[in-house]
Amino acid sequence: MPQTPIFSSMLGSSCSGQVQPDMGERCVDPVYQDGNLVSGSLEALIERLVPTMDYYPDRTYIFTVLLSSRVFIHPHELLAKVGQLCIKQKQQLETGTEAEKLKSFAAKIIQLLKEWTETFPYDFQDEKSMKELKEIAHRITQCDEENGTVKKIISQMTQNLLMALSARSQYQEIREKFRQPVTDKGTILKTKPQSTQKDILSVCCDPLILAQQLTYIELERVNNIYPEDLMQIVSHMDSLDNHKCRGDVTKTYNLEAYDNWFNCLSMLVATEICRIVKKKQRTRMVEFFIDVARECFNIGNFNSMMAIISGMNLSPVARLKKTWSKVKTAKFDVLEHHMDPSSNFCNYRTALQGAAQRSQTANSNREKIVIPVFNLFIKDIYFLHKIHMNRLPNGQINFKKFWEISRQIHDFLTWKQVECPFEKDKKIQSYLLTAPIYSEEALFIASFESEGPENHMEKDSWKTLRTTLLNRA
Image (cartoon, rainbow, N blue to C red):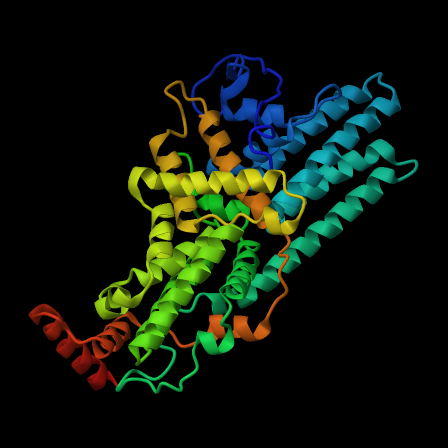
């Protein structure tokens, strides 16, 4: 998705009236800098959201206001305010205005509602929002009672909305299976596992194919993350403005599920390495995952790449010095360079920007893939929120802050819509999603049994952990 062109400017209209204190004020004009809207009262921003005969808001403005307004006001309250403004304009147009102009205005209102219901369908999950939507739809339908065109469009819009809500509801019913804690899924370790035990190499020995299957899983999970889920990072913060919104904000299950996937993949990598008895095979496994991470990088799947690197950097794996001494680490060093945390992950951000630019001009879904490191993406939004105030000293909403947050979320939404070009391999994915994962304690036990403790501290840890696990069994 083109980043700069889409969010390059904010078209708008001014609002008039007297400046009054608190959040219910109207403003003389929203504040602009270099042609871009930077702040305004809540009422002014809402007024600019509603079309007129001669004006339709820029789609990036619509997205930003609909997304960020939930920090200050419930979606159903925003919809009610929009409805009031629509009705007011409709009444003005009905006074001595031709019917065609009224129909034109109605079409713009429908377009706004269509964009809203398609982008944020979950805003209409409660009865209040649906009631407001039906009320506006009823009023607008009256503009074209003769041929019923408006009524048909609204009917289709409502049907699509209900289908979207149903689809999300179905996902929520099964999402718990993606939220399993990272624990031992097999028998607690008592002795080293048999060398004949199934491992990832027995299921897939091609790094590229495994990277493609990881990308398939990533895109599947990312597809169930919605813009309002991401905005909860902001609306959950302690702000004087969002106290209204806290009571019924959707829980962040989707974000937790995706974060859990990252942790599970990291622990799976560590498990696959630590549980191998023979050093030669263990070395091969390490080099295999290095190649998988490299293929993920080439694809643009940075999240899986980071998860794999994180798994190999866990202490139970990192301490296997005899194993690492046999590993050809040149490729691993390159990967770690890309994920170097110094300068706020500057190297990673450069690579991400390159992938994003490739995606903008890509002719195939394969080249469009951009899967950012999700926890870094979340942190960026979090720090944007913490560094910049929701409101400026004059009481106006800091629109520039929310525009930047919305831009980043919009980029993410565009990346998640890419259709996966790789065919699903059920056998490989079944292993990735269901293979036993050791707990941190079990990983240390397996690591110590692969390569014995090297100092007194490790010896004490080994004895303590082994005793703990055996007693627990």
